[in-house]
Length: 324
Image 1 (cartoon, rainbow, N blue to C red):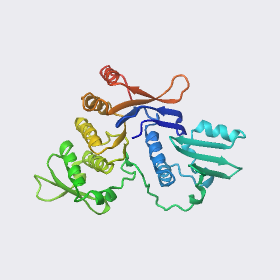
Image 2: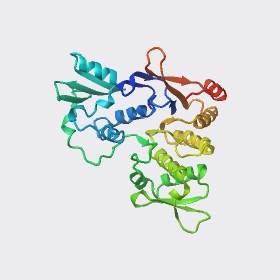
Image 3: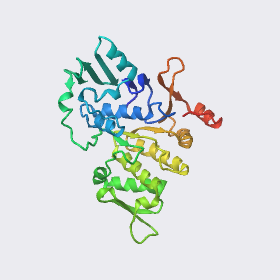
Image 4: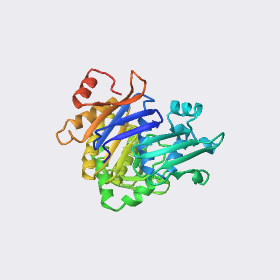
């Protein structure tokens, strides 16, 4: 389990350290406060020398460069990168816990990238122009994106879930949250999802039941696939009605303990925060979850993570303050 996260010179983070992480970790903050970047950092550090995750993130953000000598520059903390370019010191690295990605400038259009590891550095340049296209990420952690245009390996996961006890858990989660009348489901070609409901004689497409049902299916599959691993969920409330958020957090707390999963989730929603707070107040969850707000420090303008204890979070929500 990750108990401390230290990020340096990555995206918006000059130097961010978050301690005392728990089994279920929720992050909120205003736009451009680094919520998605924090999940990106976790994905990249887990992937290690497999650059497919980094390349895919660049592709999805529209940051793909045509020049191999600066293709990864958007991952670096911009002021540090600009300062490096103006000084004689031509080495810069970003760090995510033990993962280090170094940029070495050796002249115009001559930039080398290295992944620092035990022993000798791993030069990434020989992989720069030999990656498959279209590129899909080979995540080591299980990641649920907030956008339907982003990649979620539904068919790959379903092959491992179908006709196993994992499928039973997925169906149980859907029944307990958003589809109480679900009999069973199937993922077909092109990720077409069919479900059979108690009152229906024939299967129907899951998309007919709304975005919330599809979103909940992804979360359910991701949760069971993340056994003994880490689950990342970006904007957990996406597509879901506020009335089911309490049930969803209950499922996450329950199965994260049962399956030994560590969860990192982000949110924009005060309803998601309230539901999280309610579940966190239960005795069985009190030591299992924690909430952080990402914000700019008023003194130096750097992003920091402020931990809210349940009492202060409850006070903020009751006072209509904005813990986001």
